[in-house]
Amino acid sequence: MHIRKFFTKAAATVLFAALAGLFTTAEYYSERLPDVLTAECDTELHIAQYPEISLCSGSGSSFFASSPDQATLSLFGAIPVKNVQLKQSEAPVLIVGGKPFGIKLLMEGVMVTGLGDVEADSGTSVCPAAEAGIQTGDIVCTVNGRALTSNLQLQSVITNSKGSPIRMSVQRDGSRFETVLKPVFSEQSSQWKGGMWVRDSIAGIGTMTFIDKSTGRFAGLGHPICDSDTGGIVPLHSGEAVPIEITEAKRGEKGIPGELRGRFAIGGSFGTLDENNNCGIYGKLNDTALEQLSANGIELRLGYRQDITTGAAEVMTTVNGDTPQSYAINIEKIDYTSEDSTRNMMIRITDERLLEASGGIIQGMSGSPIIQNGRLIGAVTHVFVTDPTCGFAIFADNMAEYLNQGN
Image (cartoon, rainbow, N blue to C red; front, side, top):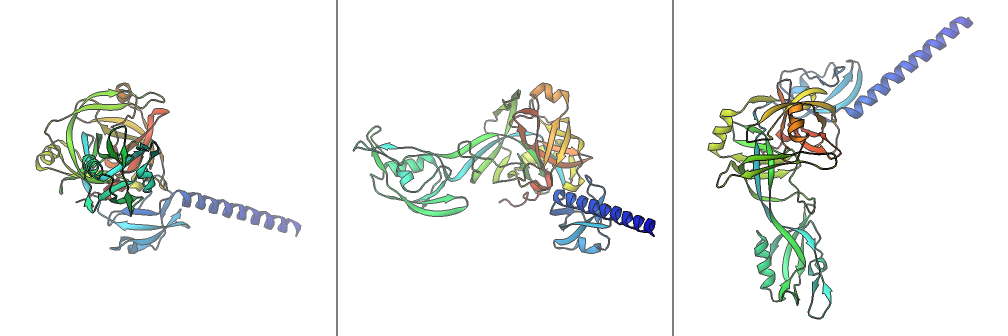
């Protein structure tokens, strides 16, 4: 009798420990699996990084409904792990990028990059912009009811105001408010001043990630273009993508990021830019550029996030001239739950040729497409300043989601 009780108690203890272990494991996966997945019609969903995870039996055709649906992922097909939103979408075939391009942006309004006091005729110092409630990073959209398009326009309005109040519409964090700026006459410059510095345009170098041949639309960078002074996303009024030839790849060193340097083509153009958001810069190629890039490009099907695994991959990028080359990398980590949509993977450059040419990831390389198992799965976005051989990358399906949302 005592022996039977002993074995019964031992068996119960073992069973409890096993169940506790399974549910702890389920919680582990729940914290790491994505909340939303997209998959192709008539294909079985697999999480390449976690082959032990699958759809619960019985999810059936509801997974392939015409609208987003809910389904349950399970561990070994038996233990429910997480409910996720599932979307049906045919993975597009895209032209792989890797080609550098020049970026010229004209802002929607002007961005306030700094405030400063004006020395008035009374000998006192005052900042009219600050008194009007304006802050660094604000976007001044209109003056006296008219749309504002340039620094010179704002300067002219303030200079010619002769001290009269100026009505302004200002945008901050996605919301607008109205205010009144009261210019002050500067004894130092003998002009009316508003006490702020502003910027109306920005230029730089980036890399194309992919092109939709059917529409001519393209995506690049994999992260937003932000103002260097304020850190805010530049509100895009209009923009142009122009050809560029890389003349130098300044090597990155520990603590010192490198950069691509090049020459903008005079009078040349790839097309227009019309969207600047958290996942990159978007635009439309003109017919000539589309024909040229289509003829020389590689076409691959988009890979969804669940198709990606840690391990070997390749990046297409350009560190000399204007022709992309393929280089070996390693995907070190995949983060399905990152709150930052541009930092979904951690990557390491392993190709000695690229390490020799640039030291690793450098500025201007953002948007360089990443390929794994014959699919376009992501793009380079950031470099680790402490180790330029490593950096972050975005999922390609994050970028593709916004491909056709521009003008």
